[in-house]
Image (tube, rainbow, N blue to C red):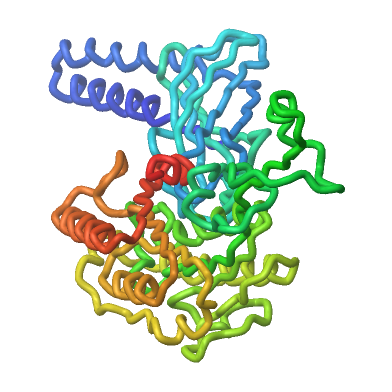
Length: 443
């Protein structure tokens, strides 16, 4: 606890000065005026700051957020004493390295048993962030004195931000775009293909019972099968993408890793075989032993087993670690990244790893031109290419003011148009919205 009597000391000093000056000059007015600060001093002696008994609770909604997703912080203050607290001013201590939307402070007047709360939002990249103890200042009704206490808050003390805080919801729209391939041969799918004579052993559910009722002949319905396909996910984590929309936000590369993990989990859950490549990091930076292409970049071979999942998670962790290190460095936000040296994608080394029959999902913020060349190269080689592009430029509610981000936003939109003009499918993801919404909206 820290207590100060700043106003009290000032009143005492003013009274002494007035009395002394009045006595020396023989001025009765000044002498009488000294009674005003002395009355203030007397009031201060009978009106001390309350001895508070308060409880503070902090809650987060959601408890676990995804990178870039705002979480609402609610700090509730309850007067558990028997005296009225006329002036309670409390200031929460948010974690360092997060962006704060709103004010983490409030001023309340609390009767015994009464509670009040303040709310604000925090936004961060991948990681765990610790809150500090809030500070409260209490004043009496006269306001002539105050005391300051450091309070211990119950409830949520850690803000956890993970790439997948909840099960991804990339539903039918994503299935139509990636990971599913319609076969020409008949089978047991859901789309009608043909009718043939009934054979012994055919499932009863495939018998054309309506036709049997009309003609008395048993026939079996064939459906067009949908086969699982192979998909390679390419994450663009090159240095030009390690920039942020605003201080405290995740980098574009972190958003790319988040999107890649959602796509990977959705495809794997649908029994598809998936692989992953990461641009901008070395295979040596991955904690788990992972194959690489001839450029030294990590390459997780296409598969659907536990080893594939472990390797993919390790590669995405390496991407996030590299991007987060740049985010923590003392560098400007996105406004300083419009002009930079283009870092190549080495499309030839990647093509050697991706099977000819595989679809490709390229996850890139499209902040420079090399990803366009990579997408066109893969498309020309016969791969079905889908580009998922998180937008960290001047779009959205959290837009950055300034010429740099606006120019970068215009350049990015032109790149999207160039890809679409080549027949390449593009998902333009505004990162303040769920990725599932962008996927379904682009169907």
